[in-house]
Image: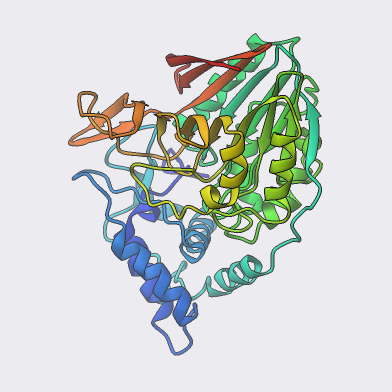
Length: 421
């Protein structure tokens, strides 16, 4: 969308917790509130208790579905009815939303073109879909993994920000460099804000580095909590039906297996931070019934030094992994790149959720948190804030070993390691 020479990608106001709180209260302040009391209380509590560090630009990505649906509805309204109200953001950076509302213009005012009460029907529809999910697919997808395969992993990438687009180009170069080999491209979940079809089109597939008709690459996508904000209808009903994701056969969990290694992709979002269906039993069968070494992939994290983790994944998978620990576990959800020390359940726990969401990172010389072996902290500096560069991981299988490279949005390798069976 063009507006005074500005190509609108993201509106910074929609990432500001104070702005979101104001619109949420406007939506609720009427004889018939837009949300139930329970939904409103939970959304308001998240806005009140999730302060954003840093004294510069405020960027906040909520997790409550009502807030994500509100973000989507407000942005959609702007695209079609509010272009004249936009201007370039005062602070330009490819990792941040690049537009803002012009000072003094309030298109969200009562009876204005994007009054939240006009969009109440869209929000209500989204909340109904959230509670009316497609059935969980019981049958996992299965594919082969060659001894010399290349697997590209990226998490939380679906924002359409310029730096996320750069990540897509860097991933494409890694796939092209492995032409002729078995290649897999895997997203660890979350297309923002709420996983609607239009968001998969505009923020994900438009930059996904697997071209239609390229049968040399197989694409896979895990289910994330933002994918489920609109009930998972866009994820199950649209994304997984794209021909590039044909190998996944409509399932949100899968096994890619070879002679030495197996990759188990799990759905931890259909039930938030839990495992729906028979996944627990299925994982046990694959790990204890196979001689292959195991790499687990999930959207949600096993552990964190920055975030609160409910522990359901540890509880559910613990009995199996205490008998035979996983070799590696890669996850997203938390928008950082963190390499953790070995855990009783997994030898190499790895967080790579830094694919496309802005995150403030510590200075390079700050001490590492206990239990962390490496944290990627390269950043662009805007005033007092350090916005971390985006990135992804490349896994090159070499028989019984896996060479892992951690690559930033510029295509630069900032960390390497070898997983040995």
